[in-house]
Length: 403
Image (cartoon, rainbow, N blue to C red; front, side):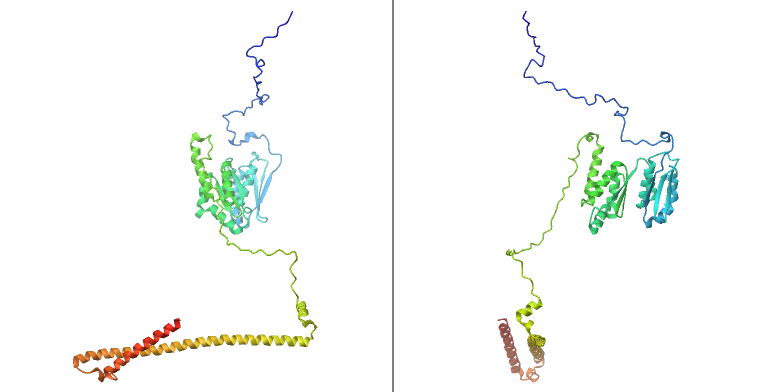
């Protein structure tokens, strides 16, 4: 009997040669069992308060931390130390203030229940050393607050530039720093080569970015503007899963270069040979032949050269003095001529005035002016002619001098 081939069904993928094989996705969570914390209702970022019931016994080892503080903080720490010891005793942490060494230290005791509180105490003494007030520094013992000490001393090499940028961060009357504190919900203190920040994790991250960029020559006002826009966008629930980059301003750095004067450099011709060395005194004497002359003759030639130089200098000085003398003499002569001319003009003006007054009297009384003035009317005419002649002479002189 002949066996017939198996009939292929229309839904079978192997029947159609053109059809591609089906791709099966791998299940990576095949062997993963569900965990009790795999729940969307649980907020994994929330920090739960520590309870003494969580710890059955005491700590096995003693942990301690110590920091140095500057001398100017000594009096303040001595005054506020009772307040610090009281607050640390409530958490079963012992603290000591060593004024001889200038250090503060904290350590755990047998009664310490919270294992993380020693790290909080370490942050407390660190903040006290960085000039933060005791009332503010004690808030770090709370679970919802963290601290960060940003070192800014090594970010800028030039000291003057560093001081300017630090002042830029503070702003006029601390306005810039206050705005940054309000936007990040942090306490910020700029002191020396460090910036101490207290707040939540998110605020610490934002504050650090602004401070570091300020010392990289990015003005804090730009970053403050971005933070303000982010704050407004966070209020809108529709924009929770949207990228905010299109709403935020992008500040590009403009490198404005100052115009430098162009230096015109003339290229020298290339020569493979090095320049000739400068000749010493002995080489010059050998060239001139002085080296082989006696000392007396050498001294005599030096004296001769000095006398010639002195005579030349004296002649030049004499010529300069003569020039100055000639100039001064001409100026004095001009001044004297001018004074004489002014005096003559003054006399002629007086005569004119007298002539005018006497002319009036003549009309009134009928007397002649010639009785009072030399030469009468003829004398006055002569003087007028002389005046005209003098003026003409003056004009001619001025024209000649201009030429």
